[in-house]
Image (cartoon, rainbow, N blue to C red; front, side, top):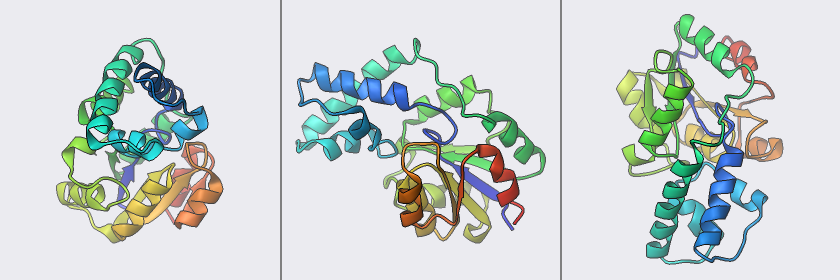
Length: 215
């Protein structure tokens, strides 16, 4: 029986791809790095910020940190002018799950302050019990640490937990922690990638989560 649901944010709850890709490409332009396509930038979503750039370029750790710092500055300029809507049926589904007694948490590769900003904008503070972000842990997805930290906090059990996300990093994180996993097909990785990562379920609409948790 599922009691705890650990959710990714970017590409799962919030449609942030346009914001992230635009900010990455502006960072690349400002730092005069070789251009990367929108698809290449989107493929890194789900990784910790520094790793997004070290994944795209052969660069030093120092340059990776510089990329991440530049990205953060541009991101907080963009976030005030670009809308980040929840995906269809996300808010009402989360509220129904919370009302039915499920413990809802978020595990994200973005910073805690940035994640909290979006949670507050979507008015999910009363719905989500706990959030863990990249600066709350030492090992990022697909390492199981974000899940293990969450389960310790909410006193949950891995075999009663479902990890939901749009990338292979989410699915692998959940599997590495001994949890069941659900991939959403409308995010940043493809259906085939999620299948190959070993997702137990796939959903095309967030509301379909209501049926999965009762199985």
